[in-house]
Length: 114
View 1 (cartoon, rainbow, N blue to C red):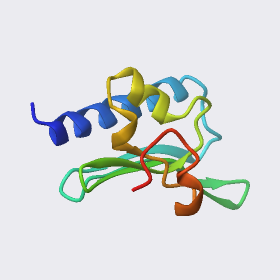
View 2: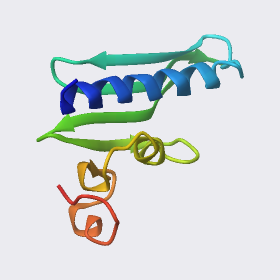
View 3: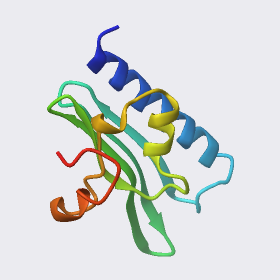
């Protein structure tokens, strides 16, 4: 399996595991947990959407994309962070961009800047 196919597979595997674990604690009635995988554009989402108590609920828990051969973590509201799971799976720090940090702040992380 080539590098990008491996990255796609691992991201989908991790997000599927997150969603399955989170589904053990039910969302409020009317709120759905959604996984969205777009392999053509290399974008991967886990989000919540729906209505509860006459309020629109929407929120991205994790948004990851593959850009220029690296994994860009755009949004991550998980406890340990998806970067931790990617590292456990053998993805090098040099191929992970913490894109939720500004470009100026990324240089102070142990991960790729772009």
